[in-house]
Each structure stands twice: as structure tokens, then as C-alpha cells.
Image: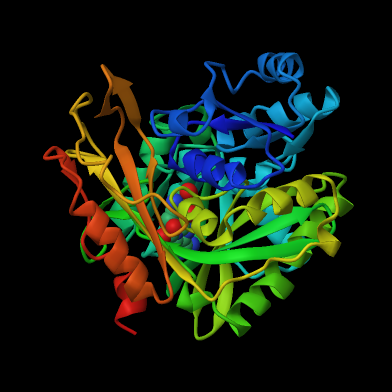
Length: 422
Ligand code: AMP
Ligand code: GLY
């Protein structure tokens, strides 16, 4: 099987790593890829948001299966374009990807199928939005409707913060994404994410995870794309995950099919759990980054079989072979992230690290210059390990972090603290 993966971050490195272990994989191309991915796959320069260009490339390279990593190509309809060209794709259609691309769309789906989520209202003008906030009081959550690279959500602890967020969004700070604003009830509880494959009808859970969004230890400071993650997440074990599937995921998938936009791909189910009851925070139409890295570490080669079964609508007969294991990934970022940071610093010590089914450094923003791996983004490395316990996975991951020679890099030392302090 010839496989093309779209994307070039840590998520796609972990996907490539898992797929490559499967004997079914004959040839693997990743577009655009990065310095780490280049060690195990061919990398191709390609505008991955241009469906026509991707389809043309896939046909020319005799690609049998395309796995779409990030949300932008999904929202741009790249999966539809590939399917129209007769190519097997893992990833939802543009219509179905609205579950991530539009907060209002998701809220309407939840209301239509009775999935528990925060109470909400939508606005296209600032004045009624401000009145609503004044009537509801704080804390309250203000969200730009569209894709805003994870920055379009303001959890306002005071009314003044919420009013500022409204003015910012309608003032154009988030571009088109902020032309419509969703305002939500603030939900208390512990967050976790459930990852579920959907083939339009059947659903198959493929793991839970918790990430650490804040830059600072103890979950403090500004939000980032994620500074580390682990799987499984104790908050979503057992009955809570079952409830989320029965009360939220299955009704959503059924509602999408009913509307003629069946959801096919992985559904990232962001949940808030309070007193054992899950409520939906958000859906994403893709694997999480860095959550994917821990899920791939746990699933290994079978990830390809599962994604293929999903794309071929054979999920009802698929099952996950779980090992009784845990995985953790620690993100190393360039100093200054998530604000300004420098590119180009050299990262040493990588060659001496173990690379096996329990230890792997996935590359996010890296670039090879003169034979040296250099930092080329905010989040740069995802140091990932597996163990019989979360503590073992943690110890292995930090042992690798400590061997990496990168003075310009920063990381958190407390990934997994919630689960480890239980
Ligand atoms: P989202 O992009 O919708 O996931 O929002 C980003 C983050 O904001 C979430 O991971 C939560 O930590 C927080 N958040 C979003 N919506 C709510 C809500 N209604 N109540 C509390 N926190 C929220
Ligand atoms: N780690 C959060 C995300 O992928 O959206």
C-alpha cells in the first residue's frame, strides 16, 4: 500500500512512525514533513490545503490511501477532492469537518441530538453580545465561531474581560473567524479528551488522553497548542467514557448521518467531567497534537489497520488490541513560545537516544540545516515514552529529555501531575 500523510508536525511524525511499522505499508510519503519525518519517510513539498494539487500528486504517485493530519485541509475540502478522484481517505468531508470549523454548528448539532454541553447563545453584533454577558455575569466563555488556531476562546473570569473579548472579536482581531461569536456558560470540572474513530455509522474508541495547555508548571500562564499529554486519562476511565459515547458521541454521529453529512475519520471529543458526568467542550475533526503522539505510541502498527477500516466503512468489525500500557509525551518548545521565539538553534544529543516501540522523539518544528537538526517552530520536539505504568512512562520520557542538548529549549517538568498525584 502506498500511503500519503498530510502535515508536518509531531502529530504527523507519530502517524508516520506507526504506519511505517505495519507490513502493509510499501511506500510512505509525508507532505510537507519535517527533519524527523525525513528519517523514516519521503517528504514532499506540496500545498496541502490545495485539494486539486494534492489529488494530482496522489494520482501521479499511485497513492492508495491518504491520511489527513491537520484541520486546515479538512476545512478546505481536501478530503472531498481526493474522494472525488477515487482515492481512499482518512478524514471527514468539508461539511462534516464543521464540527471543528464552526462552534455554532456544533452547538446546533448538540441541541438537535440532546448531547450535554454548556448553555450558549450566538451573536453577529457586539451590542446584544455585551447585553447577554451583562445579564449572565462572569465567569463566562467567549468564542470566535471559526478556526482561530486555538486562540479564539477566551475563558473570562470577569465581566470586563468578557466585554473586552467581544470588542476584540467584533473589532476584527480574529479576522473572519470572529465575524460570529458564541458565548457559553462556564463549565467547572476536569477536562479530558476521548478519541473515537467513526465511519459514518459505527464508532470505535481508540483511547483517552489529557493534555496540558498552559505554558507554565502547575497549569499556569498563557495557553499553548499543548505542552505535553498522557494516555489513558484516569478522568475518562470506565463509566464516564461509556456515558460520553452513549450520550454525546453516538447521538452526534447519528445526527450527522441524518443530515446527509456522515462523519468519517477520528473525532476528538473534548470533555468536561464533573461528578462523573461528561459534557462536551468541543469537537475537533482530527487527532490532537500532542495527544496523537501518545495514542500512536500505544496503538503502534495497528493504527494503520484501524484508520483503513474507518475509511473503508468496516469499523463495525474492527477492534483495538490494547496492551495494558501508558504513554506520556513531553513537549520541548523554543524559549519565548507561545509569544516570540527564535528559529535556527541547534539541537544536540538526539542520535544517542533510544528509538524503539517504547521510546521515541517525535519532531514538530524542526529543520535539518548542514546535517544538524535545528529548531524551526514554537513547539519543536515531542519526547514520548511508554511504560507499564504512567510513572514508568514519565521516567523514561524525562530521562530522554535530560539527554537532549538544547539550551534554547524549554519544557514543563510536571506533565501528568494530575494523574500521578491521584
Ligand atoms: P476549545 O477551543 O473550545 O476547546 O476551548 C479551549 C479551552 O477553553 C478548552 O480546552 C477549555 O479549557 C476552555 N473552555 C472552552 N469552553 C469552556 C466552557 N464552556 N467552560 C469552561 N472552559 C471552557
Ligand atoms: N492539543 C490540543 C489540540 O490538538 O487541539
